[in-house]
Amino acid sequence: MKMNIMRTKNLLTFFSIFFFSIAAFSQGYKIDIKVKGLPSQKCRLAYYFQNKTLLKDTAISDANGNVTFKGKEPLPSGIYLIVLASDMYTEFIVSDKEQVFSIETDTTFSPTLMKFKGTRENEVFYDFNRLAAVKGREATKISNELKTETDEAKKAALRAQLRTIDKEVAAKRKEVVMSNPDLFIGRVFKAMIEVDIPEPPKNTDGSIDSNFKFDYFRTHYWDNFDFNEDGFIRTPLYPNKMEYYLTKMFVQIPDSIIIGIESLLSKMNSAKIPELFKFTVWWTTNHYEESKVMCMDKVLHHMATNYYCAGRCFWADSALITKMCDHASRIAPTLCGRTAPDLTLIDTSMRPQTLSLINSPVTIVAFWDHNCGHCKKEIPALKAFYDTMASRGVYVYAVYTQGDWEGWKAFIREHKLNFTNVANQYGRSDFREKYNIQTTPEIFILDHKKIIRFKKVGSDNIPGIVDYLLEEYEEDVKKK
Image 1 (cartoon, rainbow, N blue to C red):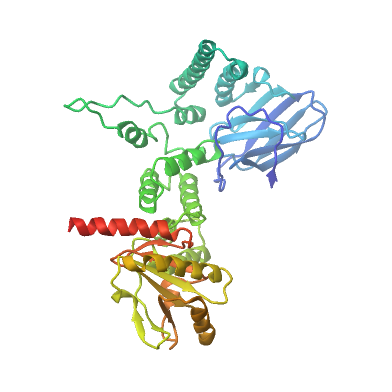
Image 2 (image 1 turned 60 degrees about the vertical axis):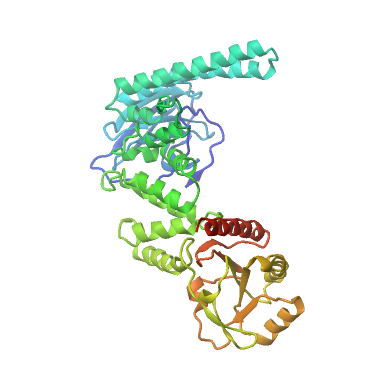
């Protein structure tokens, strides 16, 4: 059940979180909560799920504001919420070592009024939160002053005050980490500490490596993260930390992203942290499957082949694994960076035309249908571009995908398609399987070695891509 929480007292929600499943434990939980001034009503126990929350338990408070949440199975470590009928809520810690404790507060959920018994985790957590709340109010006041201040010297002083506040909060967080390494909240706060980046070393000639700081940050990004703690999946921390690492620390091209994914997953023992491992595999697979960026299906293929089809996704049933493996098999021949599958099809004069025999610095392979509405715009646009580039050796191999031969030829004549037009007129070609043709138009752009460099491109993007490949080809020729 999903909840849309409107009014909050949110002290730790720096990131969103995904939660897959709750592991079984050998004992139950019991959390007694007294909310002064709260009339009898339904209260909810929730946990984080991405940028929303999911319901774990419900209970009715009595007329004095007392409510108890209990269950036979213990709650796994994480950050939980008590949510009132008004959607007002506050956060607290549950660890696997503290399953029975009490909380006393009032309906404002002010950190200064929170009292705990039987939970060292929350005493430490709210000791920090009380300081954070005070410093937060100070920072808000200064930020508001900064918005209206026009004097540069005074603005600089206000910014310095904000930096001081940040340092004070960071110092308190480090104090929690140093004093409580055995607590779950200590591990959470440690994971939030930014990496200290040293100044780059100087070379003998006095120069420095301009990439040093970035490389150091990426290499040490996970230094403060405990990969033995599966409870991170139930905090507002890991998902965005992971997403930032993969989308900001690596160039967003498939080969680079795959290196990042493997670097991250290599740190995980799936037996010790099954939920973190599961989430990471799930997120990377789905994120890049849904990506609109060209060639990102290479990441999907990598994840399907090396995890789902390799038997490493212990949560996936046989139907999902079969689906993933079938899809990986279909897209494999046309992944960017692979040699384009060869085709021999028949042109309008009934002559065979073989793709691999074309000698061209750039070859555009277009699959189309004259009855396809989008094709009626894209193919004439491709013809107009071809007319300007044929003299530079650009070649178009246009494959008609249907069986209306007369309609196909009429369209060619009407639009004066003077590039190589071919079709499966003998019905012997398996071009659909080779190129995984599900819709039209589908356009692939090959380099002089017939390597697939770009695909699923529109006519408006083709000129820039072809110019790039021609320049690359000409530079290669010069080197040789």
